[in-house]
Image (tube, rainbow, N blue to C red; front, side, top):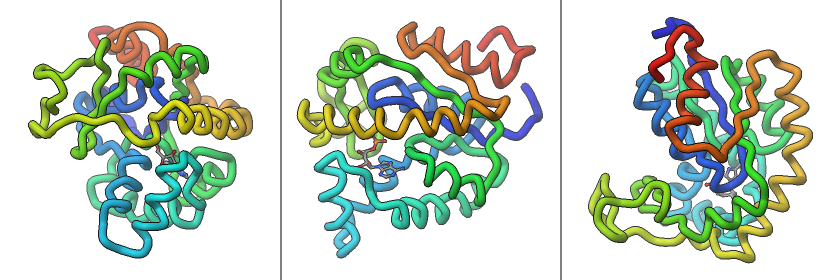
Length: 218
Ligand code: AMP
């Protein structure tokens, strides 16, 4: 396995497979996944004033203000387990956040998962999640027991912000920000655009081949 640093960023539209791919990579390289959406959902479940505020942003599909996400991500990146590397998902989501991140740390690999809006809408309809953070897809990544999480045994549910109207809004926000974000990372030679349509395994192999060109097994 390559001894290079592994500070990895993933971005892509909702349901492009970021959760699945980051999970597989984390297992392969023993890296923590820092998923902004999960961090925010965890915070929103606390009994605090901040939680109330966060909850309303999350439910509507609007982005949480930069100063809040930045504070949360900074605190998370400062933890010991992130020192040798990490996989970031869901942050940065726009140019302002990308510039802020650049001041905190340098990335070694940036992967953009590309999927059309039409495909996103089709995939989201079959998406299920668990309170523990695990995600499933009824067709591509079904749980072993119907509606039950493989990891913690709790009942799976559909996220509030996976409802059709909210998804359309989230996609719209994503499209508004993505061009500038892509342009920002395209200038760096560690940016890779990955087609998100092939199978989970094929995409995983492709990503690993960029990180470890000498490894062919994936
Ligand atoms: P996700 O699980 O990544 O789809 O994120 C779910 C929701 O969390 C988004 O619709 C936003 O409301 C919020 N969120 C996640 N990441 C960010 C971010 N980097 N900046 C602002 N809001 C975010």
